[in-house]
Image (cartoon, rainbow, N blue to C red; front, top):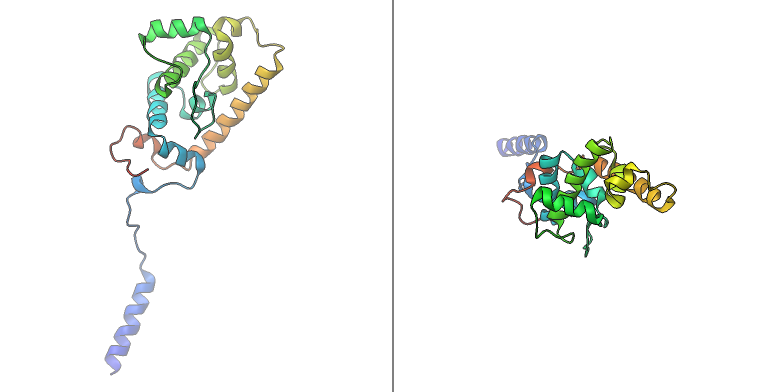
Length: 189
């Protein structure tokens, strides 16, 4: 009679020391952060942002902050480029059928424009607000400082800077986000 009681006590003590591993692999766990969750739900946004980062060197948080609509909403147009910059982009990228309402094209334009702005207007890739202003008024307009004294545009640039900082902080809570882009194993999120 003592043997089963001792065995039962020993088993219960050992069970208390063990930890259970999660049943789902990491790529199937949905993060709690709303920004990460939005990227997991909008695979096309994630793929386009990572492609832009790889092609043009624009960090994910900068390119997504420059979009006109915040993460998680639908838009008729993601960007509003100056006509001359849009035509120059189309010539450089040979993306004749691209549209500002397509997330892939919008983010590719943001990447191309940011890279061009670093050359023409001596900006850096971490200046989200200034890159946004340059994309709104064009390279020439930015060079001629046409945004002064446009307080609305300056406030929008500050808002983009703030949003980029928030997105950069949020990305720390997105496990394996870059590896997830383009992956077949994204289901169900």
